[in-house]
Amino acid sequence: MPMNRAHRRLCSSEKWAAGVRDRLLPWALDGVELGEDIVEIGPGYGANLRVLIEQVPNVTAVEIDAGTVDLLRAKWGDRARVLHADGAQLPLPDETYSAVVCFTMLHHVPTAEHQDRIFAEAFRVLRPGGTFAGADSQPNFRFRLLHIGDTMNTLDPAKLPARLSRAGFTDVSTSLHPESGGLRFSARRP
Image (tube, rainbow, N blue to C red; front, side, top):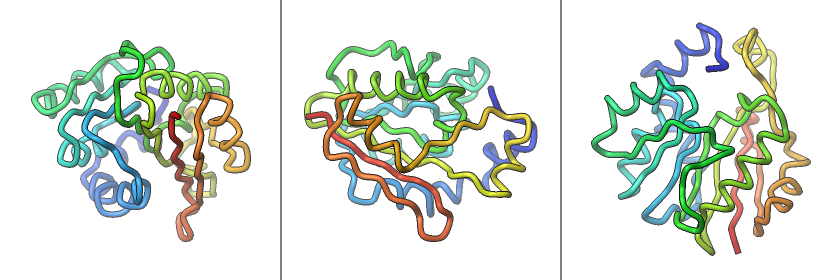
């Protein structure tokens, strides 16, 4: 997992989970229709997953780190399907899911090309009319400190719409949070 010890401690904390539940997901998913069968790419320690399983009947979580997959299965495996895989190579069928989401994980993907493969896979597994949505952090001093020794490849808000359009998405929307500066996005598979 491309996170240092301090970062892992933060992302596995109850304080982080409460912030995800109370602030991040309500903002990131405001106006987003998830439907009934979604995929979360990169759930990490499960702060998002524990909220999503309360909102959506069928949740599949795809996590790249094997140890974290074991943790997620132990905590939420009775409520969500948890797969060990790379989001750029989803072991899922074409055109099946109502939504694909990812939160605060894309900046841990080492290259823009790898991120673009994740976008392409999200597009592939979405059924027509499905939504790809999420949020990610933008760099600031505190964010950079937290990521010392981590993989940190943040999304450029000005370039993200074109990248999602190249993956095939339409109705691309992005915005920055007025206080945190975080980036949210949503797009649709036509």
